[in-house]
Length: 207
Image 1 (tube, rainbow, N blue to C red):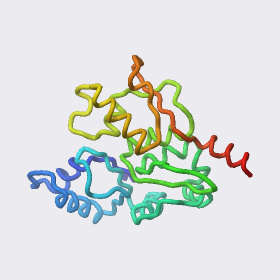
Image 2: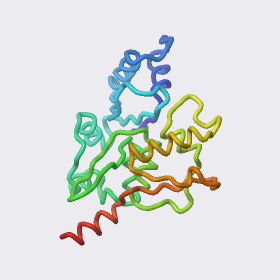
Image 3: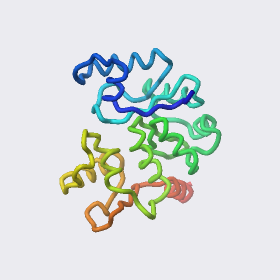
């Protein structure tokens, strides 16, 4: 049995409550409750955009306790305890995708603590990867729009308006710059305003 499941709120509603005629916050909450009764847990709220992806983990998943703590409101984690949960350094290239897969994005780091926020696992993947370094090849803009602007037809037209909104979301919500959004490049490089290595270097300088 798989231990993670990614599904949009709209897809979840259709699967859990097939008689539901339209998407509402109340119906979405009922669908989340139905999923939870079978042992599936998420840190994401039941209310939100219908086409936002939600990461569920099953009760036997090794990181279920971490998901539960974030769901219950905890944001900051000691670096040591997070490493213990993951079975290795949280900032390693193999650890950050683990966090993204369960819908957790790294939003702050310093003085031995890491701040996590629940997020669409597609968005969490891009956010977490940017915390290590600027991706040299970049990402397709359609994939970024799908992750950060969850609407019914995110990629039908990549307009300047959508590029602008995407840039605002990345900058204001995630502290990520994406200058390539308005260039002729086909792929967009993401540059976090802070990275793990920059934070470590700064702390060493001020120690």
